[in-house]
Image (tube, rainbow, N blue to C red; front, side, top):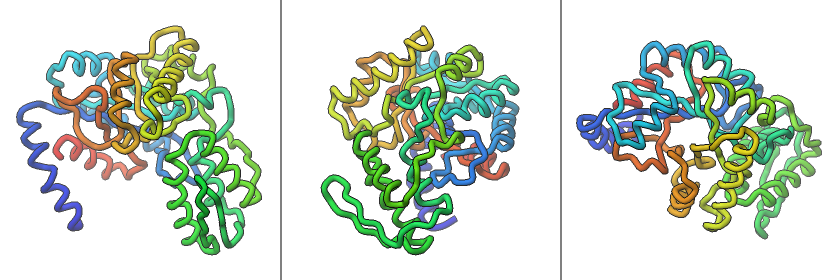
Length: 329
């Protein structure tokens, strides 16, 4: 354990330890993808066999709640049963239907799937997957990059693998905190610079309407909203946030013919949404809303920014250790 981890545990442990004495916590897990990917710079994918082992372990050793059970406990501010876990997914990749859901069904577990709606029924990739495609799929790139973002020129050396990685890590936040039209313009410039045709790769597509309708019929899937364009809500005005959130909710409701009661913030760290976002979700009337910063859920936790624990494609023993820690620290 390094110094940062030691100091972090001393800083957080007393608060959580005391909280856990007063109130039994629940832990909400966040997944994104269940797939074999050659390139996954954001570490969003868990391999199907690993995902099966993870969920099997949770079902056997923890109290995996249904969404309805969790909803009741959160809204009634009731005590959680010991070792309660909720399984959630963000974004709405097609492998949620083809890979994740059958595993959940086979283990009699349920997941809450938050869906970004703009790319339903298309093969258009999310911008971060396009960025990966430019820098990490083995294509020979020019040795330098000069690109204008929000009227500022950025210059990068891209001659080595290390330089490409540095460029990628710098560009990611620069692209992220923009509206969709600007993000699309930037990624298109990058494709032109790299002489890459946007191929809309099958393994990176989002869910189709047909797949969503099929998922919605399964007892192992509950559908929630995740905005229309997956923009950080913090960069939008109050009215723009209302449009982003309501639009995704209404698209899903029109498709599935029932209310959509749950929402998660795109990206979900505290800098990715703001007080307006909480007010928008209250106004729209969601039963609860998930964020993406680590903490436990207690009876006093704000139901419009529930914390979650992000799961990676960890070695199985490490996964078990992490889940145990989620309930302690």
